[in-house]
Image (cartoon, rainbow, N blue to C red):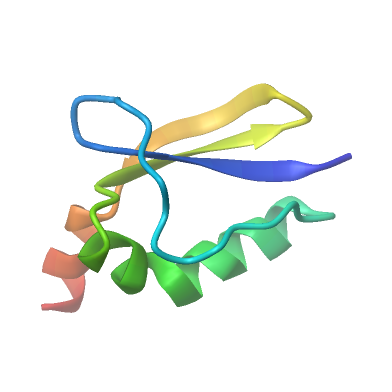
Length: 72
């Protein structure tokens, strides 16, 4: 299984992430990575992300802007 993120603007259009993504072996690894890189992604123009497992949507879109407000 491979877990991957889709990086998007708030309107759902796909963007190129500021941090090079990878495929993850577990959902936890993917979530840990987004937890470590969300601010750099947001600063680079990604406003939301969606998680996929082998091409099937797991959840999302999840706003990165909400994270910034919570960390505020």
